[in-house]
Amino acid sequence: MPAIRRLSDATINRIATGEVIERPAAAVKELVENALDAGARRIEVLLTGGGIARMEIIDDGCGIAADQLALALERHATSKLADETLVRIATLGFRGEALPSIGAAARLTLISRPEGQDSACRVQVAGGAIGPVAPAPGVKGTRAIVEDLFYATPARRKFLRSPRAEGDAAERAVWRLALAAPHVAFRLVADERVIFDLPAQDEAARVAALFGRETASSLLPLEAERDGVRLTGLIGPASLSRATMALQSFVVNGRPVVDPLLRLGLRLAYRDVVPAGRHAVAALRLTVPDEALDVNVHPAKTELRFADGNGVRSLLIGAIGRALARPVSLANAPVALPSLALRPPPSASWPAPRPPGPVARGFAEAELALAAPPAARVFAPPPMPEAAPVPEHPLGAPIAQILDTYILAAAPDGALVLVDQHAAHERLTEERLREEFSAGRIAAQPLLVPVVVEVSPSEAARLLAESETLARLGLEIEAFGPGAVLVRAVPAALKNPDAAGLLRDLAEEFAEADAPLALEARLDAALARLACHRSIRAGRRLQREEMEALLREMEATPRAATCSHGRPTFLKLTRAELEKMFGRRN
Image (cartoon, rainbow, N blue to C red; front, side, top):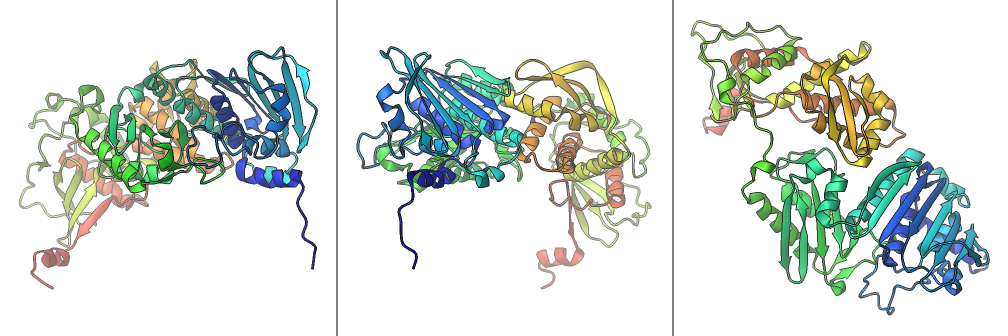
């Protein structure tokens, strides 16, 4: 039997590295948390090659004394625990694993100078081997430099994503920490490009800076308290949602987390007002008694265990429900449809039904003239002449529009058909865009006056990085200072799209996709998003000719039974099902 032996400290630290520092974002997070625990008022993060090649975190905190620099690199050595009960943990870090784990997998240099020390001191560690402490130039605070991450553990490095994907994750980690600590100035630079440079500010201003001013202007304040747990923050109204969870932030006792219990609570609070596939916008902060919270669940410390998880979730759902039930101010209201006065009078002559194919052009040309607020809950166009035969089409002839959202049609076999006008037109538009793209390139329509769209700095960088992909889709953009993008042309098929909403959704779509994905996958996601923004919206009243044209083109279009997101575009109630519902048959 092989003899049992103790592993060396270097091997132990390399094992711990896989738990604590699994990617550059984790190393950045740990080092920034150390800076916050040190009382820093300004933190600068510099990334090169996604943080794989190099990362540098500079703070003006209390610093580390010369005689403790080497000790700080030993495993489970920490200054953050007043006792060893692990009950009242008031700091972001406490395990004493981050620095030795980073030093075991990379080349780490610490330069630190506390208040009152004559000069700074430096210590270097590479692959777990700690060098001597020596004097070095430096100001008050600490400067941590990490180079060649995972060079000492090549198996771990092999599983990293591309520098761009790792950089996005690292930027996201700093974004969360900057939201958690608005009283601290943050500067983030990636490959010599400033992502954001924020002064110390109040929470609302920090949310506006990182969520985008236009988004933040629609947010609703939230405040509630129960059994010693306090909830504050800002949430989006029911009309504001995003394609991803990118604009969801949770901070518990000053610690940014991605806790599943909180995410579930937010989703449940919005489930009746946000459509499937969309996500609420929220920046929430919870203050919980230290003894009612366990942060020692996972080495990354991003998941928590609450003493009363059900109570926390109930507080979250109830507070959000009450906030959403409040009357919405005009500032938070969605963009209104054109006035009823803009519609042509009923006596106006309408164009004849268009053949399958160019129906989208007909919708676009008539959109402003025909749009109307959903004042009447059911709209029935003038009845067809009694002698007019029911056309032999699978989806039948339109009878009425229900809730200004669904088309009611009578099929040739007597069944009733309900068509979701937005979902159906979304599929038709996507297929048309896809055809146009396959033929070469989607035609672009230059804007007479270029539009400036304000987005967050990270969203702007992400969009500009995909500018070539967007150009192939007919969307031409360029940089316009930090946190803004200039739109020079839009896809001609979209006809006056909401450039700001479209760009924000595309930025989130690209963020969700991993960089290694093929260009085709990113183009598919972008085409679906373009189609969604072009499609007829729920709540727009349609004339008979428009309903007829939509039904006919659905019948002629592949995959028209589902929308771009996989939802059904129509439902059918047969005569047998109707009779069963009314008790006429078993």
